[in-house]
Structures are given as C-alpha cells and as structure tokens.
Image (cartoon, rainbow, N blue to C red; front, side, top):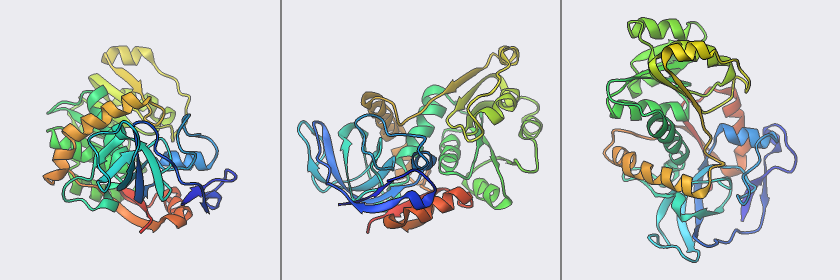
Amino acid sequence: MHAITIPEPGGPEALVWAEVPDPEPGEGEVLVDVVAGAVNRADVLQRQGFYDPPPGASPYPGLECAGRISALGPGVSGWSVGDEVCALLGGGGYAEKVAVPSGQLLPVPAGVEVATAAGLPEVACTVWSNVFMVAHLRPGETLLVHGGSSGIGTMAIQLAKAVGARVAVTAGTAAKLERCAELGADILINYREQDFVEELRAATDGAGADVILDNMGAKYLERNVKALAVNGRLAVIGMQGGAKGELNLGALLAKRGAVTATSLRARPPEEKAAIVAAVREHVWPLIADGRVRPVVDSSFPMSDAAGAHRTLDESTHIGKLLLTTE
C-alpha cells in the first residue's frame, strides 16, 4: 500500500507519499481500506516532530478515516467485511489501509457519503467528551467556542444547539462568523476586532459562559476565567496560544469555576471505546435526522497531503479538510 510518511520533520513538504508494508489486523482489530482521511492540527505537530504517535499506533499521521472493512482480526464481533465505517485512530489515517481496534469504529451515518464521514470521528469524539461528558453542558446554558469555524467549532455549535444551549463563538473574519451563524451560533465575536470577554458579558447581561471550549491554552487562560459564569467550566483542548500560563486561583474561586484539560489521542483503548460508544448513542442519531451535519471545506488527493497542510496553515478554511484515496 501507499501512505504519507515523514522521513524528516519539517514543513508541508516533509509529507512524502511512499510505498510501505500493508498493516495486519491484530486481536480485536479490523483492517479498513481507506476511502478518505481528515486533517487535524495534531497532524501538523507530528509533521513538525512535536507529537509522536502513542505506543503501538501506526507511525503515519491521521487521527480519523472512513472506508470499508476488508478483514477481521481474531476476536472481532459485530462487524463484517464490506461494512462502511469511519474510525477514531491513534495514527495511520493518511494511508490506503489501516488497522483499527473494533471499539473505535463507527458506522457511516445514514445520509452521509463515505468520504465525508472521515471528518466526523475526531470532532464528534472531542466535542462530546469535553463539552458533555466532562463539562456537562445543559439546556439553557451558554457555550463559548473559540475557533467557531474550525472542524471542532462547527461540530460544537451544532451539538450545543441540538441540546438547547445558547452558543457564542469567536472567529477571525466576517465570512467565518457568517458560517457560524448559519450553523446556529447566537453570539458572534470577531477576535481580531473585539474583546470576547466584554462582548460575551454584554450579550449575557453580565453572566458569562457556563462552558468554554478553548483551543488556545495559555494566551486565553486569564480572559477565559474572566468570561466564565458562576459555576462555569473551562475545557482546554489545545495550546495554539502556548502551554504555560498563570492561573489566578482567586478569580477561579470567586466563580466557583473548574478548569479541565484533556487530549484524545493518547487515551487507552478502553477510554476511546467508551467515548466512541457515547458518540454513537447520542450524536449519530442527530446526524441521521439532519440536525447535525459534517462541515467539509475541501478535499485533496491523499498523495497531496502537503497541499492540505498548507491550506490548514493558512487558516482560511471552514470546517474540515479531507484527503481522498479514490
């Protein structure tokens, strides 16, 4: 088979389409013939040499894919050769084949094309696990999503609206904010021109956000705490604004707030399987009935993963970027 390899860390040109050995499904795994993978920020970090795959995972980038099962490993039940699936991966989505623990498989949702489904597992699992399983967003509460036009953001907007929450978003252009509004966002904040703390307070009569989903990390830490409502929950899922920040515990105590930080890739298989099961139970029906839909900006041939990474680096896209093998 062919896969995207990284002989030496670097820029997008470091991604090399090369012939590599076929994977073999182990105990409890299935082999998936990949129709498409999706691009995530974590792939950029791996390309740059900063984010190695967890032990036992494929060395190739790619945290999600969609395709068809071509073989079953020992001990697998509930799946058959030929099933159309999408999958949450520890790595290997930038390849023509990948071995996947069966607990990390999801059926392609009704009404969604196989290739498009490649952009669902990582965002659905990230949003559901952080916003709902950890931060416990409830109907009537306000969710602030930083990077509302990203893959994570577009999913978070839709899921929060589906459960009856109010959604505020930050984004850097009018076009991105307009797309967020189309998806259901109620409060639109241009972070280049507006202070999100002040705008959020004005829009919520001074209350703030009950839950904040943050991809920036250190850069936004102090302002995120200021933006929290009493009993608010800040869920940090990224460090695009740095890894080390100062946390004012007095301000957090005054809010009776909570700060959590999670990652998905390095979780043990049983934790990933539990999240995937929850997503299948709670999110997949919303996709099947059309209340939540994947948002895809554009697709690239998988051999041109470098082109997709350049687009991601430019941050001009809305939603997900896909890599297709067909």
